Image 1 (cartoon, rainbow, N blue to C red):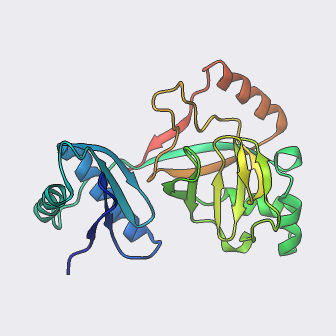
Image 2 (image 1 turned 45 degrees about the vertical axis):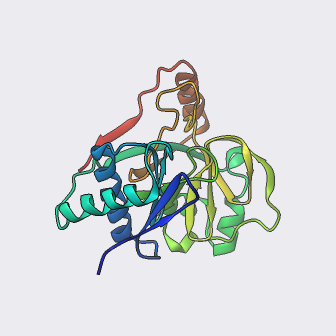
Image 3 (image 1 turned 120 degrees about the vertical axis):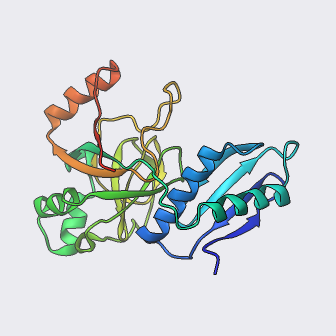
Length: 242
């Protein structure tokens, strides 16, 4: 059976859909197909938007159409069947100052689980997370791999303004708000990094498929890194791991 289905999305996009689940296996299928389409340079394709279990392919309807593009994608996938497509796996370290004004809900999360704030920080900073997708706002990273011992429901009353860089928990997920926005996640810390800057190329710092680790920092280091970021003098901690 074919591993995906292609469906139209209006007159200028189509969706390549894999199994209806959130898993690393499905993520790898999405990432491999994205790599395949990026390297193919298909006529009329404007943008690829990978998600948890699908890829939206936005195209110019004056340069191609659904039937033609779907046929090309089918042929590409058939030729690449059972071929291991290389896609870069990059691990990025995100410094985070936990608690205080930067993490006003850290105490709530700790109380919900009968833990100390320090235990929540230790559990949150321990894993290597996978960015499954970006969405909601430009560059908002949905991360998989959080320890379920700190899974915490969203706030009953969402905030109307959350500062960019805030790190939050919602259910079994954690994520980083890239810009000021409303939101209902439990805020436990903040990074001094700019995850989204429209004057930067590319404007979004992180990508789907990156691995993320969080490094706890204190307020003094936060201020130091923030000053470097504002001067464009900060070097991101990253490495290619595959």
